[in-house]
Image 1 (cartoon, rainbow, N blue to C red):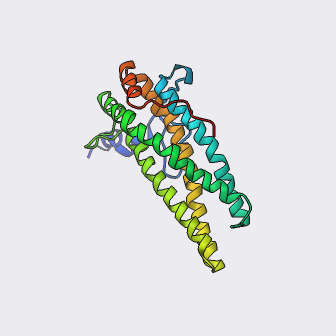
Image 2 (cartoon, rainbow, N blue to C red):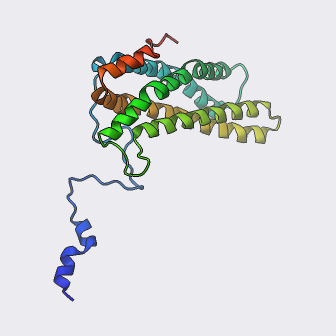
Image 3 (cartoon, rainbow, N blue to C red):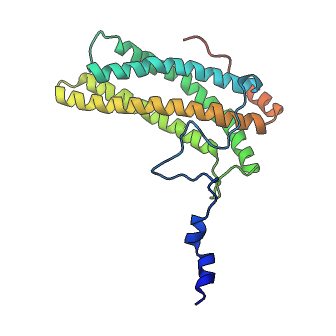
Length: 226
């Protein structure tokens, strides 16, 4: 056997000689989701008006998330205390979700996502599986997960408030707060993905005519103050 030839073509040795400049990730050391590779940010001022409207929505959403997140922190520290102001913060956030966030997601799914998904496939920005997947699929999965987390948080909080047994109430409240914290984290990450990745790709690869068409069928006006 030609051991010299084997040593040259051995795939294990080829792997060991990979260039150090090529980034590699491991499940034990995943990339920072807020530092995605190979992205080119587009300044807000250079975004099409339609995308600016969606980004304005995100600013309002972040403002609405802050008191909700603070309420979760207070409940972790103090539990459910009537008259603490936590109830009002929770009700306001769930109302805001129903009135503002749901409509925002629907506009994205009906107007922007289908066009962007097809364009990403056309330019080769997709998976190799069939049917091909793009970053739009990730964003749509986020929308589904956000709905699930909203429902779980809302229902667990309502259940905890009605349980007479302190131990059971504490257990259900803990589950509600876990889901609520996951919701806050996912919403913030989702908005980052859209503002810095998806919308940048859309601004680069979609046409002015396509954005005008989106605007005619449901453009977002600048977000109203909360």
